[in-house]
Length: 81
Image 1 (cartoon, helix red, strand yellow):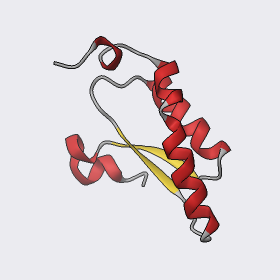
Image 2: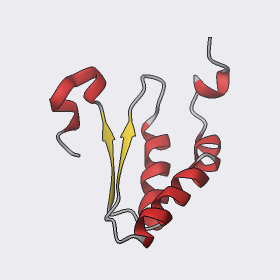
Image 3: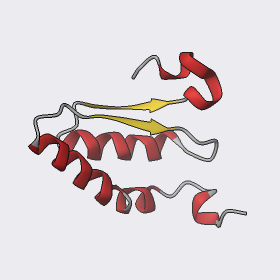
Image 4: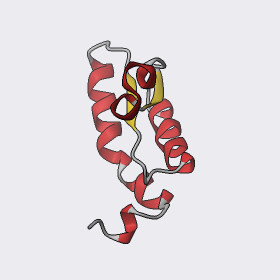
């Protein structure tokens, strides 16, 4: 079973976890790649947590960051990508 930090909204923890995302975005941008971040939605995620990821990704050079639900909705869940 997952610990409560992963079962309840925890925007601070999500923000701390974006450090690795930022490093990947910066590395790709150095090579001229337009980065689109796909945020895989899990049933325990909240919209506020997704907004943190979107904000951080775009503030650090991502062209866009979109929520992807292809696992649960098939192709329809990845249209925004």
